[in-house]
Image 1 (cartoon, rainbow, N blue to C red):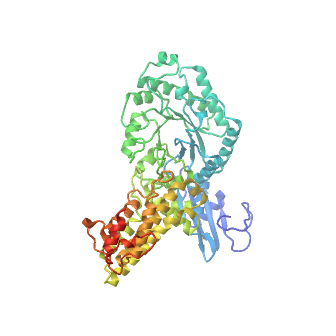
Image 2: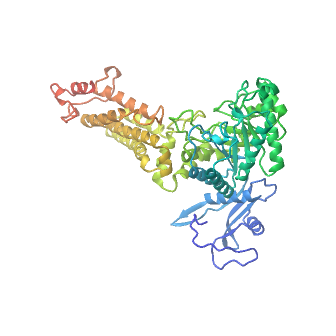
Image 3: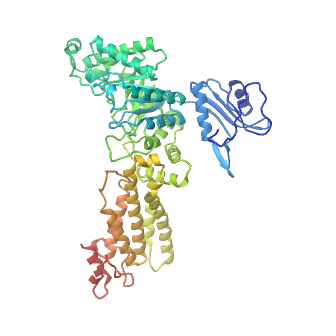
Length: 608
């Protein structure tokens, strides 16, 4: 309410009279909210599931009214997040748009994994991520940092240092405020004796310690464990070797952990296991043995068929569900993680996952990038999908995600759109620089039709050049306009975007000058383009607009070569004229002109 502009808020207990006047009344207590919802023609509560809610905005008894009702505390919290989205502004006054909503999630668990390879997020970045999860109605944060030795083979037995324990407590409090469950993933397999009672007790003690710090969901990870390598002689004697032996060891340990959690921490979430075979399709000896030996209720994590699959279908989920003996599946999607392609940031929308995946998974978790603020663009869309996959519209959700990442400033929104629009393709699909392609098409069509003797054709070219030039200008200036946290994370990509934007501006200026027969202006612009091209490869590796931005500049230079005569074979409609030839300037060898022949001069200048 304060973010929406409320200056005074008075709390009225049930049964007390409302203050006089026409102030907005917000009803969030069960009794009066239900009455107001009925008056505002909201659908009945009926069998509203967990985390569901009803919300209505309108007028009751001649007063502006908001009514919120949740199926539980989480549902009421989610209703408040939807109310946040209904803020409108008119004539300088802010309020809430009229609406009637009955809503609930499809996937019971929706959230994010911090599981990328490389340096972990900072404490502040994690706190901000938890706030983001709350705003987007997600309810799980799985801590699986590969940079943390205390959850892996090296030190999984050891307690965390005091300072890190305090950070976890702070995360737990922030998670509680956002109705998010903290999860902790442990990967002890490469430094554990499965048949050792002492090692098992050490693992249970560590899990108890993490529960005391505020973690309420746990995952055992065996994805990097070899079938043929044990870490004590007793395991080889107890289990033997091969996939079935490994599966028995994994299942036995998981069973003991699951029983311990149920007995000691009955409010903890069900245990999940990331098996060694977490992405393969179909039935295998390992999967069959694991399914047979895992206790009922233990969940199994998978990533789809493939480590980073282009699509995940309901049929694939059903087949894997069958292979794991009907154990509930947690879909842990490796998007938008970019540790395998560090020159890329994946900012396109979540796509290629059928609605059945969200509806029939025990949870849907997406694996974030090293860049947390940038990750929130695709993660926003993944949250939309997991909440309502049948109504999910990737492009609409993506535009909303960009607006959320940019904040309220129009220039910032344009800058973030340019960044995301030129970093939107991935293994999941998507067309890079899709918003730019129609502008490029229109510009080339106008250029090809332009005739110096036909003013209408030049005006058409001018309009197309202005639109395309504006888009390139937004790219060039984006690094100064995106929010600071995002700019700090994606500096190399913003620099590369600026370089492509500036090169594009000069290329448009070069081609427009050529169409007008302005050889001097065209040459100046070409020199600027070539100077920017020479910077290609400078600084950290960052790829933006792959297959579009650089290709536009290359095509422009090739057309320029054709126009100047440097590339006779390419032909070309626009030719330099005596009036439009080069003029003397410090960086132009005008003395190469012979008898005022501009083609001769351009050939000399184009040939180093």
